[in-house]
Amino acid sequence: MAATTLLVTGSAGLIGSEVVTALARDFELVYGVDNNQRKIFFGIDGDTGWRRLELEQTISNYRHEDIDIRDRQAMLSLIERIRPTHIVHCAAQPSHDLAARLPFDDFDVNALGTLHILEGARRFCPEAIIVYLSTNKVYGDAPNRIALREAPTRWEIADPAYVDGIPETFSIDQSLHSLFGASKVAADVLVQEYGRYFGMRTCCLRGGCLTGPNHSGVELHGFLSYLVKANIEGRTYTVVGYKGKQVRDNIHAYDVAEFIRHFFAAPRIAEVYNIGGGFGNSISILEAFEKVAALTGRKMIWKYTDQPRIGDHICYYSNLSKMMQHFPNWRIRRSLDDTLQEIVDRWKSHTAKPV
Image 1: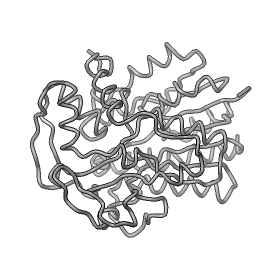
Image 2: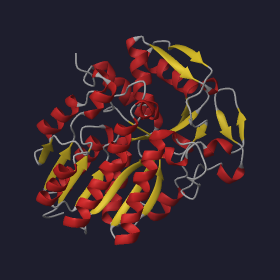
Image 3: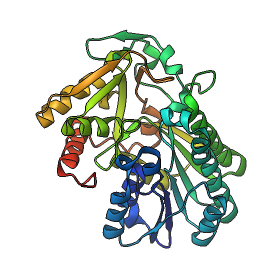
Image 4: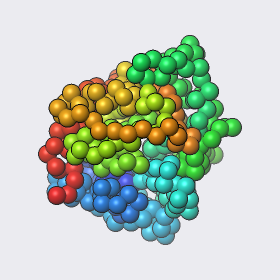
């Protein structure tokens, strides 16, 4: 692409940094917005400063902007100045537990910050293609109403209508979301509305467990990354409810970035996709314990609390059929086993944590 500019918010985070790394060669300039709010939310273990440094040292056309997306004037001024042709909005407060303790911060980052980006684009670069990283928490706890059966190591979907996973047509209404889920619903609907109402090319990616070796995983956010970290460092991992058999589908950040590349090449208006690993990359906590222990040679240390997180999913994996239909040349290339190995190698090398 010639004379194009990519703006990535949350650029030092898992998905944002992967998008910068994977797509930088497609653009003349790449601007990243990230003020390391993750460190403020989660403490030193959530620090993404190491990843920002990697980007600045290895991506020659990368320009970092230390801006808080809650700062309306700063975001509007940035968008007016750089006039991006493409935007990937990854910045977020990502924990539904933390949202209950910090409701204003959660809503201001997730909903208001998204509005700043959308309105900035509408005013100064309405032709920009915008991809927003939403979440499967927009469905609230409604997936828990699907008939399930209990297997030795996981819960399984028993309803034939959903055996291939949760589709984009699943209701986001009349369910318990958590405040995090509610703020992400607000942003998700705004992204769709700027598409439908103003004709802008926008897309919501409702992610399952997005993962990879560049995740600064913490207990409140970053399932596989934190689980591996706990194993390697000998920490006690707390399993919260559902017998440790709750299921998540995991998708490598690389595959998310590659899907965004495909969407940029053939954008749509107000589109929504459930992006995750699907059934093939799904795993329960108990199964993850076994796989990680086999890779590290260290038995998992864990304890159990019977009270599940409010609004947490029992068994969730994404139905990828719509994505595959719209973009038949895209597919998941990083298997769950490959992803786990990469995460293990990263934590063992100590490059994902300041030492």
